Length: 531
Image 1 (cartoon, rainbow, N blue to C red):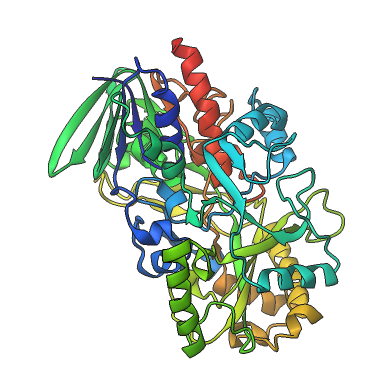
Image 2 (cartoon, rainbow, N blue to C red):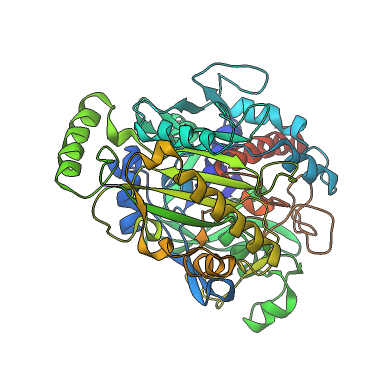
């Protein structure tokens, strides 16, 4: 018997486990379907390349065929390991824009404006640059400038400035707009996931019980109250009971799946899958959206200090392995997406609507396709897409992956912005700073010029940049799932705490916002129970 059961050992689950067990009288169970985060490929930042190539520590999910992507299935990597996606991501620390959170509050979610969530960002953060009005320096999550930055990141920044963008040294400062180098969630040359920041330091607490290899099959209900969790563990079906609350932190793709498997969701869809309805909640699984992204890849033989498969690249890799093992420095401390920016697709935009990630290597098919030689890649993603999709059950089998349909690029406005973004990143790549590397676009994009040709290229090559949200949306509307306290509408003893509750996706990478959400949720849970 536990006070709280947390489903999912990802970013939000790790935060909740740490914060709730600060009270020694509170007993917490954390259930994670994946293993402990022991692999060196997780802790070495450049191990990301191996993770992407092999799919290790991930769920291996894909979308349904997407009409907006010419019928292709999209890739949906989600972390299946302690730390969740923070153990397999590119470690970029971004909060989003002030306006994102003010809009959440304006849509009927009191307490979620930027000024109200900023203290939780600051409480989570230990920024090695120091504290100021917008940054913390005493939190568990280490944020820093890259220890051994690649020489081509600043070259990209110079090219961006040559293209008319401003240089921004802090994308989490007063203004997000501009190009610059990203800060990352590293510490001493290693990845600093939510597990390393929040969970690992507290594993010795006697009131914290972590179950790995524990696949949740359903939430146990008594009438309209969550009372525990059923899960598969060590070849057996087991149950744990919660005296206070069940906290669902399985992410935007699997939190709605678990709710529906538990009989909480759209009645007709539950009936289709022979699941008895505990509570008819139509919004579960609705409103799915994600940042669509497309990449221009450049072959640049002169850029021999970028990552690449070549003789010089192999020598550089061996040197980097020695430097990382001995000193936690060198090329293997790279997160690959070292630089980037936030720009406007047209001057009339009030705030940036596009994000750039500059990768110091040739990135094709999420890094899963082997490409020889050296070069660089420039992503452009749409920050506030209008297209909306859904997550649905494939069957009542809890081990079957859900049906994921982001409905990418179904709204014409999304495509128009992506076309403008394509032109802008091509312009940056053509500036003297990058052009001096003698690069040229790969064949897939090099002959693309007209808007119609660009649209075909986008539909042929665009995909996720790994930020699905909103499937258990926070709000007061008919298709909203949780209230501003993250309590599931119509159900007692059950909250959802992860990216699925975002009313709309933030304007940037989603890991830092999820950690903030969990920090805020921990305070709300403590206040509700007098803990």
